[in-house]
Length: 380
Figure 1 (cartoon, rainbow, N blue to C red):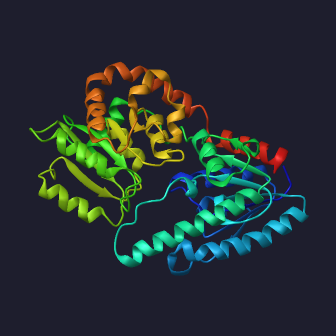
Figure 2 (cartoon, rainbow, N blue to C red; figure 1 turned 90 degrees about the horizontal axis):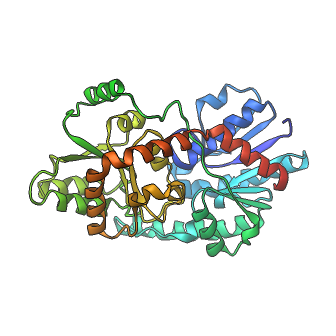
Figure 3 (tube, rainbow, N blue to C red; figure 1 turned 120 degrees about the horizontal axis):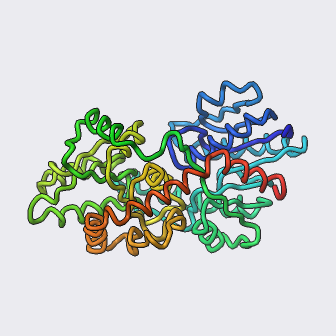
């Protein structure tokens, strides 16, 4: 494959979510040997090793994606025009650049609006940026020749939010890194627990997500944990992985309610695969999740994962694991019941979780990238 490809996205890095998916596509294209142009704020060092990859750096003023978006759009349009003239293919992400070609949607701004938190300026910025992202998203998706969604949930949301004809939307699920995310052996699990200083006799549930707003549903999980420990120690520790404007407030609330011994805030971590290998469960009562790569990776690591039924990743669950799907992310009592069901059914669910893990790990990031490029070659 020698035709030039231009990919326009905020970041091509391994930190997770859409950035990880963008990186996977860029790496696969780089390995094919043709010209690859990456119009972005950041790229992973692994991409710099390829002589056929050109990084078109776009500044991000004040480290703000909101301020960087117009620059990304302008530079991306220029490179898209050049690439199309050369007979190449162009792919943008959502509303970040209004260009003909393919558009890969990882998140639908028109489907969910986060509840503003923080001071007046922070709330105002959130409202303004959401309106801007929603407007640009609609323009970009209507301009695209083909729209690629990361789940059927995303497909339905973007059609409803923008009016783009459903016939122009293709669904391509994310891939996985089976060498990084896989069930841990007994020895590896024991070693991870020792390294993390987690006691071997305690069950551990993980929450992985930002604490800057209510989208990931940590408030529901916190209330559920409070109820589970209301009459004594429930026997399960909750480890919270993530940062955000509300983290300190949650830590104070845990102290006030006497939950500091069973809830530990770990902040931002780069060793999530190690944490997964040492944990027993992932909990994700998210209010909106176009896909949910963190849940996907937990399943690949062999962990059962409680996740909202509306999340895109829930489409990958078999009927044997339907009890792991949460009907309402606002329902604290429902989450309590689901957590209690997990304790009762750990052994019963082990087999279906293992089967799902094997299925997800059989589809790699390269498989995903190859499928994406096939769509772009046919329709982009």
